[in-house]
Length: 120
Image 1: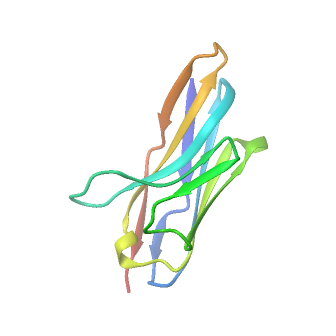
Image 2: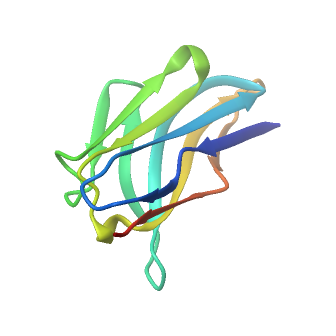
């Protein structure tokens, strides 16, 4: 059993910053990738950023230069630092983790989602 707990969403003015966190816990053998997706009202869920085993990071073009993904492997936690936020960043943000459990099977887990609203 694995749990993902997200935190850090909220309301912020345009140009402001927020930091999201997602902590994974439970029967984890290894974590292969950690990332963030978002879904705005009436739109499909889209990739925001992903960190693959701590070596490669990919970002959506819309957030490059403004958002930074990072990991704390000791805490099985992924962060998303969001700077220079824009109203179009408003969405529910979901953590996604690709991991192997103690039985060495790979699973894809999603967090519960955290609302980010950028508005004046």
